[in-house]
Length: 194
Ligand code: HEM
Ligand code: HEM
Image 1 (cartoon, helix red, strand yellow):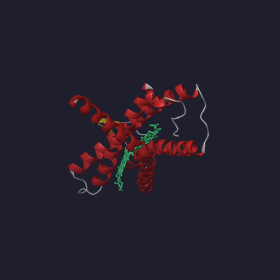
Image 2 (cartoon, rainbow, N blue to C red):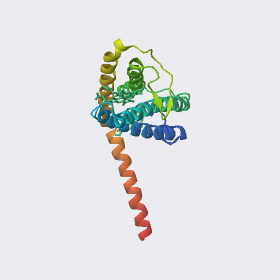
Image 3 (cartoon, rainbow, N blue to C red):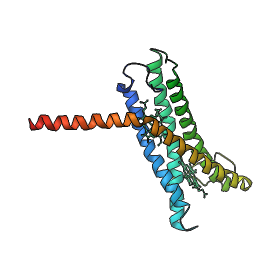
Image 4 (tube, protein in one colour):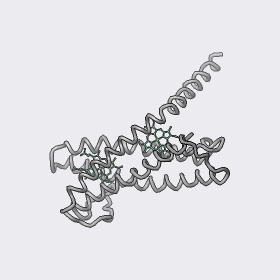
């Protein structure tokens, strides 16, 4: 059973559907950030192309922070609707999933924050959001740039490792959903044919 699965029909509530739409939207953003991030650091240094990639990466990273705030708000709605009806049964399975999802949420916050730490420490006013300069979260401080760079590197790849763990964990759910979709499509085409 998952963190969000304690009452009979949690998946059917509109809040849960919204949460999953946000989940896939953000998963798409992370895919762009991971591929773009590894690509941009290998581009020729200090070229307009590399600058454009960095600006896009920072903007997308900042976007995920905004989406995360919204996602937490939806998650609270889901929890409110579920847990005011019945408290969760604290099985090992439930606690394992709760811990994994909590780590994922913490990393969804820590990774972009470390990106801000890196960019702000390097230079003040260095984080654009699709053309608008965002205010600094951290002071400019050249002395911590290398530390911030290492932090962003290690946090992003720890995040990736946890995403992989989560993907493996959820694989059965994904496979079952896929089978349901395929059989629904087949069902439709059979009824049309008949
Ligand atoms: C890209 C990064 C990803 C992150 C950060 C992430 C995080 C999460 C979190 C925190 C939840 C709990 C629901 C929520 O609060 O949104 C969740 C649910 C879920 N995730 Fe992911 N996820 C990611 C990618 C994936 C991938 C690649 C798969 C497919 C293998 C997947 C499949 C699922 C499924 C099926 C659920 C629903 C679980 C349930 O029914 O309770 N996720 N994910
Ligand atoms: C969830 C959000 C983010 C993800 C998944 C992500 C991912 C990555 C990855 C994979 C790299 C390449 C690391 C390497 O292999 O050395 C990278 C580099 C970088 N990221 Fe992010 N990032 C995110 C958010 C941000 C944000 C919000 C900023 C700034 C505001 C940022 C600034 C940077 C910078 C400046 C680099 C280049 C580091 C260098 O030159 O060594 N990132 N990021």
